[in-house]
Image (tube, rainbow, N blue to C red):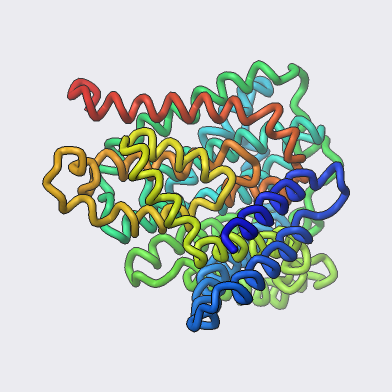
Length: 439
């Protein structure tokens, strides 16, 4: 059973990677792979708790999907009211290299406050108003993915995996920031510095020169654009605050934010007599989000959850601990693996597998205590390692869906850049641990 599930997952993954040559949407393969893997497990495992397990995994996946739908809808609303133009018109980049640095730093900072997925949605939508050339946008969007993943690594609310480790008491906020801020910056600077060599100099085509101009709502009500940008960003910022205060899942916070913005847009449409045909309603914005990306998330996350339910991921973690027995190598390998398999179930498996080792007295196991070297490495590697492939992180999948970035184009142009930053960041963490000068 296990062998057949692994073979089918690898085959499905290869088909997803070949989306563009095959002209088959990746969501198609992900959904089929999800159904087939769970069917194999059901037929061959004899698990009496299958239905309960399936409902549990579906619930966890649905939390991510609802969050993604809410965030994408809010961003779409901001865009339809011309909110992003308020920002793009104020970006004074001297050239395209300067623009890449500005957008990368902005994505890095935003990702630490929001999360890497929401940040990527916002930044890529802004990017579409700054550059008209498709392949240039692919390069910039890919660098934004790297920046967002790096920015989410040192913040306890910057990525799903950091939230998991934080809530499991494996890392603390202050220690996470102090130990990972420099490695995260390095993981950003190295790839961006290399990527600037790919840029062909030329005039930046801003929102005033690209085909996609400000929406009619923004031209009729320019002050409404600024107001909707502020309201939308505050709605997104509300989510981590809501989670910190209530300890409830982030999707509930995004649901509240979406409901409030929905109410505000309806009031604006009625009081300002805005034509509903201009697309200012939330109901119109929902139709504008990329549902294929949502369905791809559903398929791939549930497919990975089938591997987790079959015990494949926990067995992998056990084998790594027993055979490698080196925290630095284990965490680094998990980071690279997270580019292929979703990092959420991988980190969950690591928490279960390595969580009890911190109570042991052997000096080797001191790295597994709270804020130990292993957990800092795992936090960094699981987040930044997802940048190695375009479908290795939620941020990458979102960027791929919005800009239609080909899988193999990313491998050819971006993977080595991301790997250089990944290796440099891991080395910095290692040096911080062995040399007090770096602390």
